[in-house]
Image (cartoon, rainbow, N blue to C red; front, side):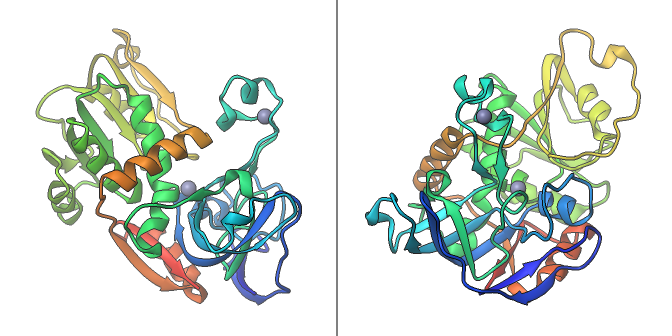
Length: 328
Ligand SMILES: [Zn+2]
Ligand SMILES: [Zn+2]
């Protein structure tokens, strides 16, 4: 097999030839068809997240075909198209797992972080954390659903069912999917991009956003909730200012630059500020069923696996519209 391997944070990934992996009990192996590049991969490569092990193969938005099964895995999965998300394993017995909040497990394993991920021709995954993919999209267009879609979906749920006027800060891979899901649910989307990024604003409007503008602009009316996908702490006070009394601001990313101090009156009147961490398998099942029912437009830019570093650098510089996807 081939893999793009991170040996040290802040160094380029290296293309390596490795012995083919074989699944252990309860695991399966996939031949990777496509793996999307998430901003979390960028945080991992840039040394912004603690890493439990090195070297590591990043990548947790994997679509592949099951080509080998470990002991105890349902034989019907062989040959199936499946997706592998960020949540790679949970302990099953900590307080959070027992309460159905496995996204907060005390002893989790994340794909492409605590175990090798999908920037590779093959990947081994825990079969209990993989999902059959029934949506119409091909592998390249299905891959971004596995994290941008899933985390976006969880963030949308956290924004609240009563959030009709919804702001999205940072219009990248996650927001472009959430915008469509939100419009489908009868919400109105207000998209905030980098100031002056009229191309991203046009893109947002083309996906159904009622309004699009720069992050420093005020929306035309007070929002019920806002989700921040951009890793920019300075957006927090801006988003709090944009939501109504009792409005919610949801931080959807795993890492953010420091939040500048702000006046208490921005939080006053029962506004809420919260973060979204990881996903549960229930989120995945629910969102993938939605995606199979409602055809989402998934905007992608494809790169051959060996050019993963280029994909990461395009994501870092904001040159991308939609999601970068690696094809082995
Ligand atoms: Zn991700
Ligand atoms: Zn646990």
